[in-house]
Image (cartoon, rainbow over all chains, first blue to last red; front, side):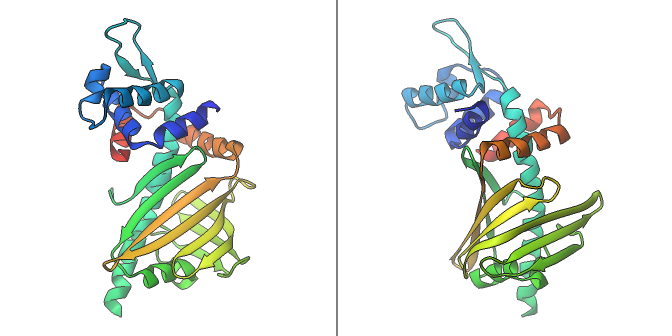
Length: 107
Length: 154
């Protein structure tokens, strides 16, 4: 899979998005990352592997304490595009919502 | 900004949006299927020129007159199953030849209608082209904005 496809796939999962959101605040260990999730440490490790393969995170080299760090570079293009896309459609759908309310009142 | 719209990437070639409207299914479908309705919302508050031949194989073209310029979009209806489903092609005339396929699905629950839209790029090249165009416009987004974006997605 090419890099951008891996980024798309990595972002497709809500747990992985939550992990990235956590890492955007600063580096963290696997245990710290796993804490808020009702899933096993093993499952979290799997998600981290997907994120690492996509180039979205890097991990420290110390064997016991391998903090994960966000690498936003591959994400930036996709995130910006999706944000822009979202802004357009939010404005459009807000108008639709207002319009639907208006015509329901008229009828 | 409204928090009512969720945008996700369910696969490497798709972008999915989900939005709930406080209106019955039939009305939300109608709002998508005639210029008389579309003119009132698709332009995001800007004047909109609308041409629409709402039948399978029929074409549509919308031109939004925004303060920063005119934006033209066109496509063709591929499937219509009133009032639940519309499949159409979507092309921004500023990037001719990059044609996405949009699938709109409408469902009603307790008087509210959920619109789920999945936009599918035909190829990785088209997806990459689209994303690169966005990159050039919004370069230099801060880490904070990125974190906010990710938090919103999750």
